[in-house]
Image (cartoon, rainbow, N blue to C red; front, side, top):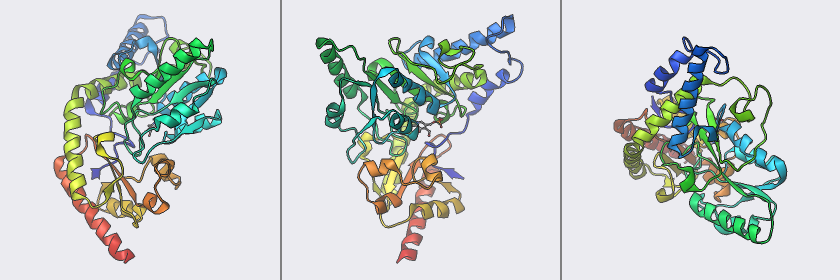
Length: 376
Ligand code: PLP
């Protein structure tokens, strides 16, 4: 098998699995219980949160642990429910886009690389705007957004509001699900007030994520109950999941630079050996994303042909693909229907080797040739 769909999911690493295991069995205690072994588990849980928080320049109490990024994104938008409107980037993952639409959010346009149009952002901010959501890196294109430039615009708006006596707060939320693997993520440097992280994209367990919440942001819980996570996320803590998440974050941070170099080299091999044209200029995209367009070819058929040869690739977000919907991301960057139909996403990761990359290029070229012959 040559797996080139790491943006959809990554296997749990051996180190992560080993760290999680005891918390399913001998250390199974509910962290809220009063006896000593449970207190020990509670301390381990808090320490794991501390590790995750430290990596992004935050403190354990700034994090609300969730069952994945979808929940974290939805929780971020609970700010808007308090009293305000929201803006979101047109290319956001559905877990942002659909909750923003529920709050009548307006979308911000992107250029042909999927980069935010800052003038459109500026034009759409009103005195009621309370939340702006822009993913640090896009899950279909790998496009990296200039978050600190967006944060600078937001700071200006805040000052202007202050000078006019307008008390409405304005927050920046970013979904960093795809970015944590490849970029140095620091909340202060990015200038974000809310940040979503996802264990499932960094060789941690699925269904585990968190929302970083800056101390001045008010949220309302999505559901109520035992009051865990500062009352923002009731329910018994997922101790093994969070322990695994922390180990995955630690490993990711330790290998960040080496992995970036490795993926950049492999990406270059694919770009030079494959025929399709690159959709996003590589200076704006994550090193492990290769998104190509084979205009006139049906990428769904390519996926099918490649699967028969043991190569797993994708046409876009796994969830959109499974519903057979046209990608809103590829539409937003201005592709025609036939270009969208011919777009292929390859995302590199830890399961790959350099030999696999050459072999995948050969098999993809073969599949494209066979499709071109069939169409002719
Ligand atoms: N946000 C982004 C950018 C993603 O890529 C994903 C998963 O594909 C999600 C959110 C949703 O994550 P989960 O399915 O773990 O809730």
